[in-house]
Length: 318
Image (cartoon, rainbow, N blue to C red; front, side, top):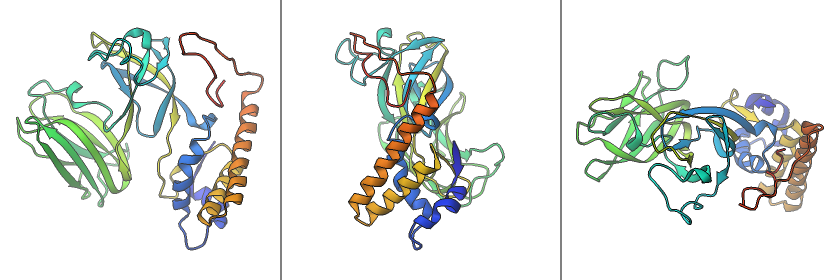
């Protein structure tokens, strides 16, 4: 299930000290709560079409649990698995490795594999990221740091001023080739950052964010030597995204889980470690019970595979 911050505060706000912000407690406990397992509300399926030799998970997701490429199931491999055997290739890992974890990147799509058809250097544009929004927020900034065509590090902090968009204004031959980082500072509503070819080509989105957030995208490489368009179906786990307003959504298992997580966080802040341990253990207990109820008659199947892709099933999956 899911609930809004406003609904949670109405039910559980009394457990938070009166001089503290309820959302501050949610943002402290959220990452710990999400790390307790891949329970039902955290697992989401999405289809991503790409012609690159990699796929970047969108904002709000942190890990791949299972995947299919072109309708064919593909196993996941550790980040350095292909490095230690055949070595990394610019066209992706050997097909035997499936999707290989490639760590965290600052953008979903690299500029080097973008859509420019000219000199392949880019400007950046910040726009609203909601179908109902036509103007940017009137507060906040987006800081972008990049490497230009000469190998020098450049940066720009774009102030959001309520206009339709704001952009960098580099000229041909002086645009960005590689993005180092994107930082959202005090941005009240989600916005998107696009790479705009300076000469010719198509604009494409490289990042989304809001509040005070560092742009990050988990990436997985796979074999795509001929840059064919691939449909990748991914079962992903959600990542905690900081909340601020009453309409922000929190994906939780049950209200009892959130209650004990909140009380556990309050106890930790008061250095009451015994109470904190009790409440977090109750969280785990509720999650285990709910997982059994959610599975029904389906039971976990252990896959013993000598290649290393079997072993214990993922916690809370079946």
